[in-house]
Length: 445
Image 1 (spheres, helix red, strand yellow):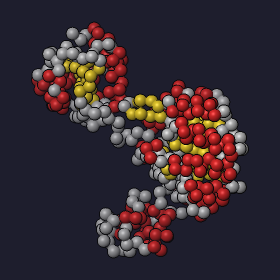
Image 2 (spheres, rainbow, N blue to C red):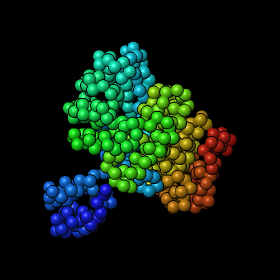
Image 3 (cartoon, rainbow, N blue to C red):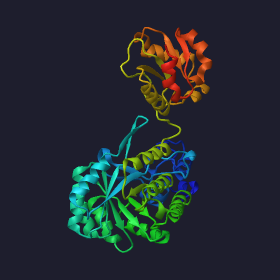
Image 4 (cartoon, one colour):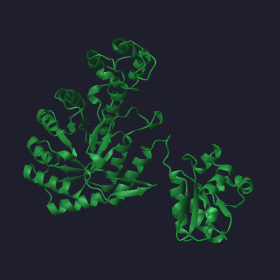
């Protein structure tokens, strides 16, 4: 069980030195109990106290890193059940499985298609990050050849899946520098698998037949010196799996139950492609650290990376585009000038509609701290002075001969004040982005 603030305080030096950044040891103890700081901030804590406080200072869900360098995937280290309580920090990794019993040419082709699953959404590159090589042959040589082919053809992070330690090692030694997740530890093989994880410095995936077995297994593996674990409760039926993963999350966060303090991996069942998307979407929301699909096409990938991006975007830090002047098409001195905010979704909803009009245009993006048009207007982040300053800063008047400005219809009330402040003739555009093509063709002159 988690220690209380007073329990922790009894083990601290009680010097109130302030070196930890907190005025008193009691305040530091309370912060530590609330997972708002870490024990290493106290330079004077004794070795004995460190050992006793290990449970209190550890994150409720272990941070696990799969892969290395720019392609590493960090999962876990979450602190809340629901995003509105604070935020979610590490989005689940999305993986596609490749069986080792396929011909090498087929493996290379599948890797190529997975590499292509990258999308540009609201100014961000989103993609699948992992490839899972699965042992279907029970042949160490075939597994090694599959791992070698995947590693040679992709920079994505790897998951190696086998319950046979000899097969696992045949693959792990070929790509240990890329720090793959070694998935396949269970109650029968966990000692050998733990030795492999330590030998190659890789995180280890652990599966139990049920929650009880999993709760017994993870402390045994941790005692062998493997701290980065990714767990699977063993359920295959979606409703039971969702229930089990929710219990794991609740017990880890609310009860500080250390055997479940690790991110979760789940495997989507083979079969109907539409059901597979629904399955993965469910566990992106609750509460997988990695989701592995048996197959994935572009049409499946886009909705999945989109829902993941939406859930794991911090609502307190909306995605923003740079506040500046953008051009759409081959603009000239007679091109229209439109104004919008730097909320990424607003801009990337508007920009393709302007492009679709076939009328080359300037778009002046105003810095509203990432707020949408109506929100920014209500917060006084989008007013006549701010828009006028943005026009002057980007020097759009030097780019056109006219001085006509199109503002969103939702802020039509600003038109008179903006004309007086900026000296531009203000035209009130449509409220919805979908009406922009018609407006530019029929109203703009």
